[in-house]
Length: 551
Figure 1 (cartoon, rainbow, N blue to C red):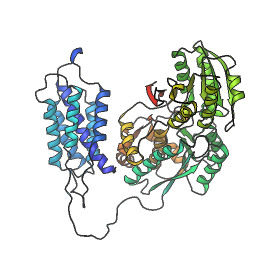
Figure 2: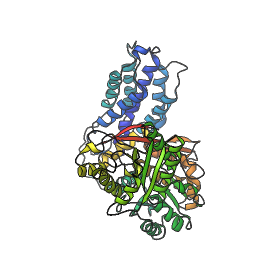
Figure 3: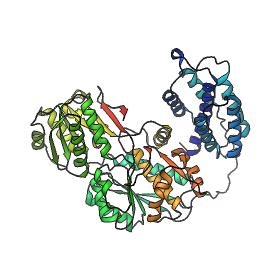
């Protein structure tokens, strides 16, 4: 899907939502017996209509440019002003108007078309409405707005000499990445890389950074501190990267930071390393992360175990900063809630079997065995636990939230019944307009997003590095470091994945922005950490990972 087609769809959806808000504001206060749809239901309807919108017919030449942003804003705001009673809270309406303006700014819809769309949508939503709108009525209004997008007819034109495209020129700005494509975390690297590549594409479609194209230079971290460190050194020296997105494993991030990025003053933004040890690195403020750290996940994991009625627990954990940190936070908080941790057993990666560690972990006959390990190790010892009847009740975490892993375990033990009903935790963002926009962009290029964690965090980390570079005015690491909070933290005009052209324009105009990410608000504290939500997930009766809730 092209960015322009996406903008056209967002215009229609924005107008439909404006109409919905107009109608809702003009109705009598709903009674409990006839209340309209909730905000979540409306958002779901809008997202579904966007996903179902047909692609416009191809054209051989672009249609005439549409009206200016100011003209669009005036028309939409006037339509709203004519229909919304005075005193109505207009914050949400204003945001939708702003989205409509930005979506249409480079579109080929004429002023008359826009005025007609707004007028029709308002009339459809408000005509003869004496009761709150139902969900089906909302769906009909949004569908009508989407269907009303004018589709230019193909135009036959004689061959023309190739035109020079205006866009970023000159040597590319290399932003490095350290994702894993081999080793225990190898299954997570490709989709996170996809997220970073989408970010680079959007930036370049918007004119690039500092007038230059952005290039993502990908290196394999190999789920190894040494391999990651060597890759980081190559990015910083050979490729000239002043900002690097990575790594995935906490131990790899710590090793690369201490050996390469901190002493060479290169910005490092991890989308997936969650160890509490990263928060206290002596990093001179060069290390950030867009994923919620395990000080939060460990608390939620302990709460989950307590809510599920487990009184005793043991854990097998990978013997590195990630595994040890999460296990320790879980133990502290589970015991605070009155539970007993009977054993915390470390293990090394890539062992042939884990029978010795399993025997030690289950010696106290715990109610639940917690797997704080990477996928390859988890697969081996969970299978051994089930087949050897060491344990049959498990809790999982972000490092093993993989449908591929669950499928493999189920296949080896004879079906989904063995793990059905088991729960897990992982950093995850509440569904928002930003997550919906990213899902559309991702699925248009790569297919279904899947359940793997940290894909949105990878997009956000790359985008923040690029926006901070534009704000810094130079691709120079110390200036980028000093600009990260300026583009990611409040105050500032809120922008998201669908507003990158606007974000760059605002930065160049000297305005503050506040980037709202796919993974949630990316507001960095003094340690370079962000706060966010933890997802509770569950394995259903068919062996599929399903969302439960966010905490």
